[in-house]
Length: 388
Ligand SMILES: *Cc1c(COP(=O)(O)O)cnc(C)c1O
Ligand code: SF4
Image: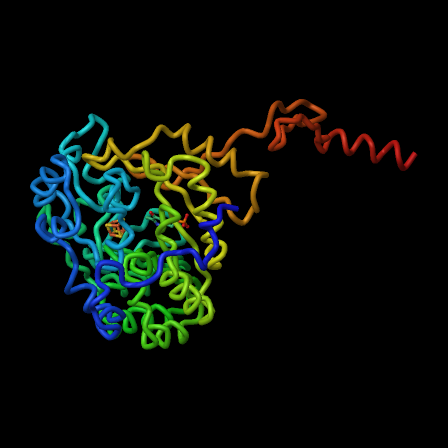
């Protein structure tokens, strides 16, 4: 274990905003009002690189820039390659469009029966409830609509979406996303969750949100009250780097788990941000300490202008292989590629099968040692000889 993995060593406090009252700092609306959005807001605390300065111009028509004061504190001002900085500060590289990159990289538009509902799988839907977030990730899969910098003009059609779910009795799982659902008011979140909670065939409700990570102040007692009345609610957060695990985040997570909500994490594998085993191991260990199960590790989608953040798929496979066996099984996320064009999430796993023969299967363990396990054909033969 790295010494910094201990919770008592995680970042805590107000950082650059030491003078701000507790009342303001712990008020999520204050965090929203005081987000850093313009070049000059950042220049007060950081020396921007030329590439970042150009990035601000590109962002205007691509994906807005916003960073909450809370999250900004996690940027190391002395490190232009800071892994937190690279997730939220735009750079000139965003104007490099590779040939395979798309506006809608995972083909969501063609599976939208109602604006805001993506119905790709037989039993579950993705329900986009807003196009806004607390901060914006430069590699966002939904850059086409999120923040509205590209004039997509997304408007959640809540009533239409809810009645689509009500009418389709095959939908047993609803995943709220966006944008970030926690950007909505308490009343709106309560309304949506209560409506879903009343639908007989909906047995599993989940929310995907990066707000606990960008703004843990949002997890208020009023919101927890709303959550505690929902029969089966799960939440997926989105942490990419160990330094995003702070005392504040751990408090927000423990409020959620105390209220009976299972937590998962979805990370995106990002070049020179979290693309090595040591960083990933530290991240997954910290997640477990917060009772968060690492759920998915995503290959970065082919979103336009993201090639500078993308790794080769072999990097993800290598990381998973270097985790399996060397740490708790609970700590290991499933590495997936969301198929370009709309095939859904496809799991990628290191190969532990060396060969499949008629009577046995040859397996390789995490140390590379070979074992064989009899196939059922062979087992049947053995049983017969035992009976005789
Ligand atoms: C990711 C996703 C889901 C949920 O997939 P799980 O593998 O069940 O987590 C559902 N619908 C769409 C369109 C998705 O992209
Ligand atoms: S929080 Fe999620 S939806 Fe919002 S910008 Fe980041 S990845 Fe995109």
